[in-house]
Image 1: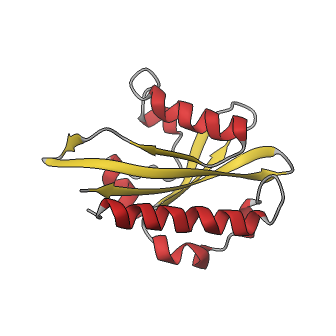
Image 2: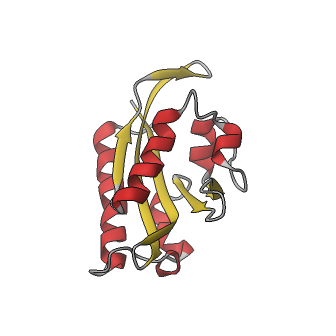
Length: 145
């Protein structure tokens, strides 16, 4: 687990990269980011594609640390197939807010126990797309003490 202040700094730096790549446009495009750009956050980054025909979110990349926090590797999976909307409504609202506002959304989950470890998750969700249409989300997530 990461100290909360360190997680805050890492999430702020991740959001700063997004702002830099946005370069005054409404949104950066997914192609504005290379895999190497995510090196400082290795394992903590997830990439989710918004499927236009259904509006559902499919995770195309789930970092190893994120998979550990989630208890499952979501790579290639539809989020709502793994996390039921009735129980994880806050998660889906985070994605909807990010899509609607086209702005970063930060959240801290209330503390919970998972596999015998008491933890809190801090995350930032960043929208990407073309023009003003969101088609991809970048997520960075840390478990904190």
